[in-house]
Image (tube, rainbow, N blue to C red):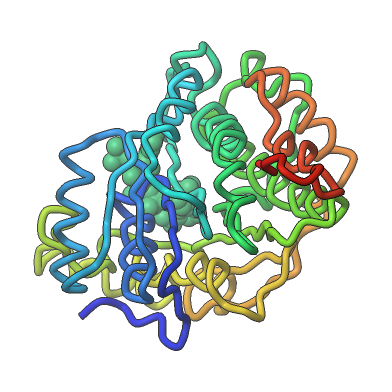
Length: 322
Ligand SMILES: NC(=O)c1ccc[n+]([C@@H]2O[C@H](COP(=O)([O-])OP(=O)(O)OC[C@H]3O[C@@H](n4cnc5c(N)ncnc54)[C@H](OP(=O)(O)O)[C@@H]3O)[C@@H](O)[C@H]2O)c1
């Protein structure tokens, strides 16, 4: 059985999940499909996307699942990725895909940026720019950004965003997640200033382990031994199916507000989703504004451009209002 997200409803909604082929993103996609959404899996491997779509349809017969080719580590490719979407609007985007390296050497993206900062933050920042016309076409779209508890102990070094001066994989990962969270909160402030009905919500999955995650044919296998070895960890952590719940709640719950942080209830590590108080360094508007400016410089695009270009008065009669 798919993890239930009832009573959340998504019938008629279009939802894109980056990294929807594996891990938490797979379960976000499955749970959104279970709630009735037309789900698009944004992923770089067509074979993995097909396997995930099959697995979702096995859980939810009749589910509507598509694939958008997506490589977040290649900024130039993002516009053509979005151009493949055959949608008139996007109601939900879950910015979930992520890379976490645990050992050196420092690696770079196609654009010669540090790989984790490039994939996790810059790729999603630029993707959102290209998605903005579809998001503004929806009545009240939600943009859900996936952070991490790893961001709690980190601070952004705005003079060394590429970790060229000092590279520690764990710290660089934590900083990339902090950059994402800072961006998610800043995006909501900018949407509110623009008077937009769209919401930006930040989530984190707690600690979500493969060994605690139910199997899905073609996507994730778990042997009986792995299941048994994972049991003690289950006291503190949970599976990726449960790790998906904050994002699904943020995407669909009518009571969610923009600028909120959702995470698991028990010590921020496991359990049902609840609203958390973000740490001050995650919501600092000065740091976020500087990060935004640098992100525009590094990607060449601004996600708010589409909102800034929305005319605030109707066009003359006979003109189309794009
Ligand atoms: N698991 C946890 O305990 C935990 C804790 C805190 C935060 N998070 C965050 O939660 C999110 C999901 O984590 P997870 O544990 O589910 O990770 P995962 O199982 O490793 O899955 C990562 C997903 O991201 C995709 N991805 C990686 N690089 C990409 C790129 N360049 N372009 C497009 N997609 C790319 C992967 O695609 P491929 O299959 O092609 O590699 C995969 O679908 C991440 O943002 C992570 O930082 C996880």
